[in-house]
Image (tube, rainbow, N blue to C red):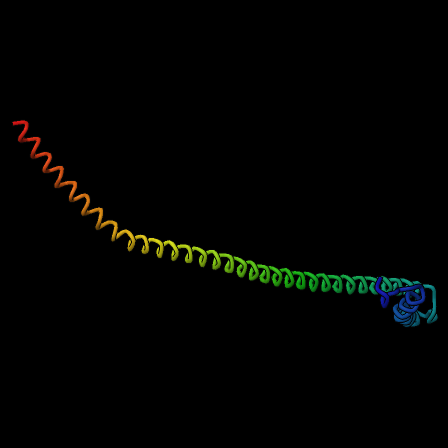
Length: 159
């Protein structure tokens, strides 16, 4: 039990007397109409029964209050837990997004640099090849004319 909720024997007696006092007086007044004394065995029994009921009701009230406080504490705990889990998951998601963004940005920069290097190498190769290509075209053209000349000679010999 919580510290402020002690329901000892002394408190039970006082609570029982408080509840039983009204019952004793009520039954005692009715019994005086019937010609009995104010404190008779019937009024005392009624006081004891009503006092016992008051003690039970007080115990029940205290139990319900403790239960409602426990439910409220559990609700606050669950709310705090949900808040913390939500906050941590959002933070983790942001960190993951930053990490992924940084990783793929670096990868894209590396690929871009590689493509730029390949493009410049291809352009240099194209410039370097244009001179050799022109020379090669001249050689091939000369070779073709020589082959044509030899083909003409072969045709003349074959006739």
